Image (cartoon, rainbow, N blue to C red):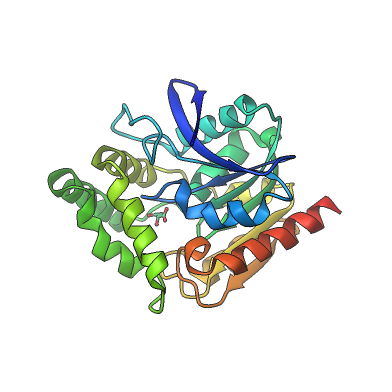
Length: 263
Ligand code: MLT
């Protein structure tokens, strides 16, 4: 692992390859290990960096009760600076996508291209916010492991292999309850960034697992329609976590997208 000071905290990150920077932003309640296969597959094209977001993985713990998407975005902007780059290709999944849209809104000059995977631009409904707060209470009382069974069912396609199940379990169990609680509240409070989509001027690819029940293909296709020139790739056989469910298909789609963007 590598470590870098970012704003008021220390972030851990894994890195492969050299050249222009690509930053891989994980979802909830996960860590950089979501992207290990893509890091191994794409290091010949980019310096591929997968950070643990504030409070996740090997990064320092959260110090506040709410982890906002704006805070995550500001961390990513400074991470790009502190790694010695001015811009990055940003690859994001789910909550990582909420942070990536906030990054585009707040620091567009840092974003060279954007991949939005299994995510959405809208805010939570009232019912969605209430469900997050119920989950936060359970986790605060019983620990992170209480989420494993529900999330394995909700995040993975029915036929997901053992490797994906084991990696998911290990990431959930390694995430501190405080981080889960703060992330849930940050997501509950996040802004609707649908209007931001039409402001995106960098090459963008929207990707989604065909069996994603949380941010399904129709949501992805609608987002892609609102972003000028964006492509949309639906990944067969994957649910909400294609990077660990169908790693080769994700790496291939990223390779094709970057090679096209490079001209
Ligand atoms: C994620 O994978 O990051 C979460 O499913 C996002 C969410 O709960 O909205």
